[in-house]
Length: 120
Image (tube, rainbow, N blue to C red):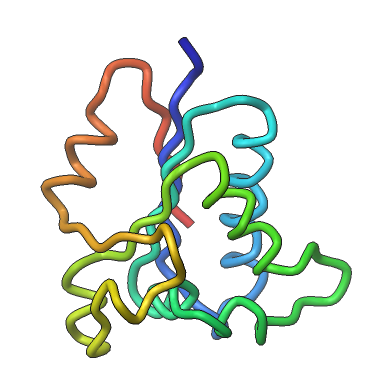
């Protein structure tokens, strides 16, 4: 059984290095065979909208959209329900494969046996 990792991004383009680090760790964990769940909260919720990760730039970093796509291909991508609502976002506004869920689902994921949670 692969190890599970839950990564929560609490920032957006206003803190590019921290946001990119979260996506990098999540994608690297997917590549290593971990069960990965990436949560987008606060301004990070915008990275679940098509075009937003593509527009993000950080010198010497893997493009955020590529990292997001690795997570979508091998893990789960969730946007916080309250964060989405505050920004007027619904699942129809998100990239394919992304979902919206609330704190109860996040808590259930991070309280699972053998789960490692990281917050950026």
